[in-house]
Image 1 (spheres, helix red, strand yellow):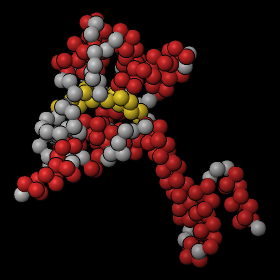
Image 2: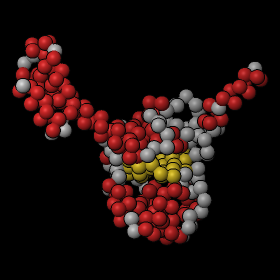
Image 3: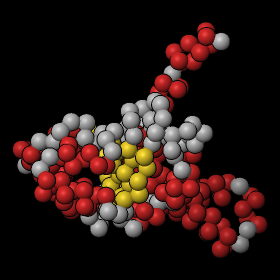
Length: 253
C-alpha cells in the first residue's frame, strides 16, 4: 500500500520516469541486493535521462529543420572543400557558447542546407535552442508580424533563440523593409546569440544584394567579423546521388 502511494505521488509530481523505475525496482528482486544510495541513484538517473530526452525532442521540434540531418552523416569523401578539422571544431558547439556565427557559401546542391541543419541538430542535442528559416520566408514572416501586431512576440522569440539558421540568403535583391528588418534582428542578436547563414552568393557579393550601403555595412559587420566561413565547391550533391544519374552511369558502363 505504501509503495502504491509513493508511486502515485511521483506521478502527481510529474516524475513519471522515476515512478516507472520505482515500480521496476519493487517488482525485481535483484534490486534488493543494492544499497539504498545505489537504488536511489538509479531512480534519479532514469528521471534525468527521461527529462533530457524530452527536452531534446522539444528543441528539435521547435527548430523546424528542413532536413533531418546529423553531423555523423556529413560526407567528407566527396571533394568539395569541406575541411574535417573545421567541422570537428564546429560540431563541439563552442562557437555557439561564444556567440559566434557560421557562414556557408557555395553553388546550389553542394550540401549547404544539409550541413546547416546537421549543425543545428547537433546544437539541439547539446541543449541549445535553434530555429531554421529560409531567408525569403523569414522576411515574409517578419513583415506579417509587424502588420498584425505579433512582432514583439516574434522578436522576443528570436532574441531567446541561441542559434538562428538563415538559409538561401541573397536569392534575390532585398527590399528596403527586408534589409531593415534583417538588420534589426541581427543587431539584437549580436553578442547574445549565434547566426548560421547559408548562401549561394560569395560573401563579397552580399553587399550588392542587400542594397543600401549603410545597412549592408551594418549587417555584414555584425555577421562576418566573428564568423567561421565554409566555402563549398564542386558539382551538385543531388546530381551525384541521383538515381537517374546512377542509372545513366550504369547504362554507359
